[in-house]
Length: 107
Image (cartoon, rainbow, N blue to C red):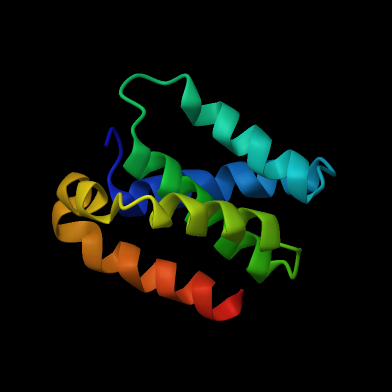
């Protein structure tokens, strides 16, 4: 990953807040946030799933509908990429699991 886990979390939160304040709806926000990162150098599957998780957590914080984002996360996780994410996140994997559990419990 280009960014550390907590660094990426903060960037996604800033992006979320900016698009939220601009009046974007749930569908537009996730697309806009992903667009900020998808074309970046070394964008990987771990970053993609982390961005979705952070976005879902931000939706929940604002009491917005995050069901579609959670569905997308669960579909990706069903594809068995957990080990690849563990390798890419290294020591930060425990934080990832905590956040993943938080969205599953909220969804």
